[in-house]
Amino acid sequence: MKIGTSAFPTDYSISAVALARAAEERGFDSLWVVEHTHIPASRRTPYPPGGDLPSIYWESYEPFTFLAQAAAVTESLLVGTGICLVPEHHPIALAKRVASLDSLSNGRFLFGVGAGWNAEELENHGVRYEDRWKVLVEYVKAMKRMWTEKAPEFHGQYVDFEPVWVEPKPKRKPHPPVYIGASSKWAIQRVAEIGDGWLPAMGTCDLDERMDQLRRLCDENGRDIGEIDVSLFGAVADKAGLEVLAKQGVRRLITMMPTLPEADVLRVMDQQAELIEWANQLG
Image (tube, rainbow, N blue to C red; front, side, top):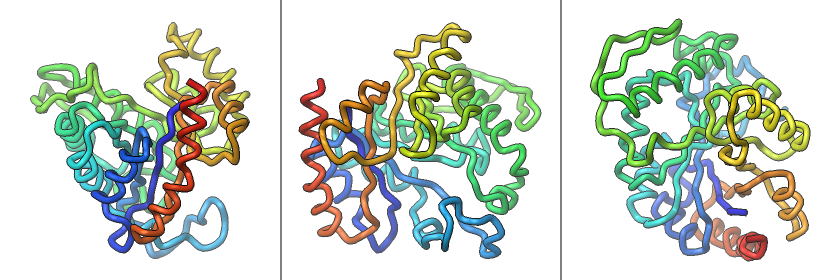
């Protein structure tokens, strides 16, 4: 079991440099950050958990810039998007951004992807809410070609291009692992189809049920479930909680850091050091 951490990074919270160094020093294996390009002021789409939308959703830094700074001051810490809203990007530009970060970090990038929950945010990018997952799947397939072929071309419903040169290629071969950040039964189908990992949040689904579905779909698609890295956003209270998750097939638990100044975040990290000790004991 590996222990990662995640954050909504802002200009008033701990810096990328301090957060990344502290995470690596304490034994966290990975650092994940969120993405929202913006939040429409209309607030037509309700906040999924209910209540007012926290301001950190529109105050957070652009993730690739933040993660590049984090990678530059660490040696082994993995850096990931948790998650990148793929339909809000052009796939050619995003393929180059991902490959650049992976190359510059010496293959340490984890590509967590999702389609988004805010309808008007997607609409501002020219994507219909109803189409968001179809767009994501097609974009990921197109990006995989750009990461692995010299002069790829792609002809789909949402992206269409003749042969192009997109360099540099990622350091990680064949490409950075793609983690599907959603918990529905349809999300599991996408994990089996295009994913290298699954990135759910604790409490958003019946984990045993979804893992059974993933095993079945991997068998149907001729894939080995052992190659699917299951990483879970959440928290546990004791070693027994980690052991339960490990038995369910979770390989990484990702904690959440508060959006606070450096001293406050470091205290939380120190409190979570026991999690890393428990994880190491699990082997």
